[in-house]
Length: 125
Image (cartoon, rainbow, N blue to C red; front, side, top):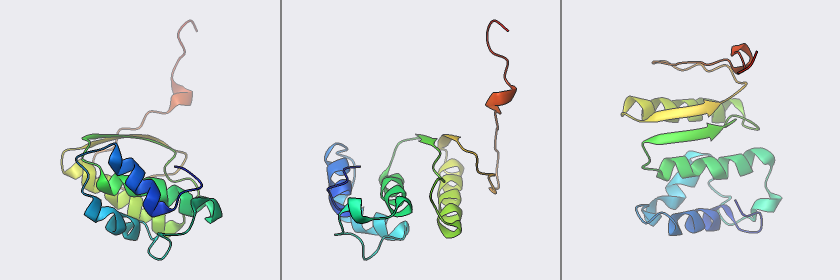
């Protein structure tokens, strides 16, 4: 994310590096994450949660089979968390895989495999 760009400009920049992305869906992706009306506002003026949503809008455009997400629920309100959990569940249900780190307790249906890193033995112990 580039702070001086708007959410829409950031998605255009992202799409320019991903030729399979349909640029006609950029506004739709921002709408999905609750940023309708903020498309043309510079990201440096948005809240932390809104900036996180700009980043997460890319998931709505992604065709990648595997998503690797680091703390995706940080700075997101309850509605945003529910929306993201549904998106992750839909991706997994359609054959995708999501690897994520989180301190958030997931309230998702389906098969979850949790690895608690604090319970793993380190090599040499």
